[in-house]
Amino acid sequence: MIPDFREVANAYLNHLPGHTGRSKYFDLFHVYRNTHGDPEMTPKYWLPQLHKSLLDKETMRELLITSGFKYFAIFTYTVP
Image (cartoon, rainbow, N blue to C red; front, side, top):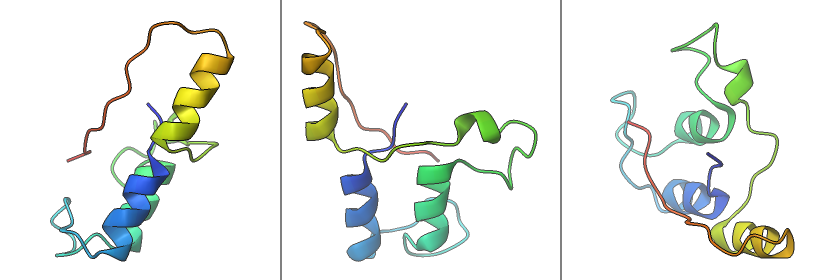
């Protein structure tokens, strides 16, 4: 799973509702959690979840096609 940075940025810039109970709005904590994993919740397992790249759907689609994938699915979900 790779975070859709466009969606993360949109949620932050438009003050969408937060989804951890920590904050009413999607704040920098949510941005960090969605782009870098959640070290506070899973201290032993967050490092493998650390995302090295931030992409959007369009860039991911282009990379998959360029890499020769003929069939793929891109979907959006929210981490609770």
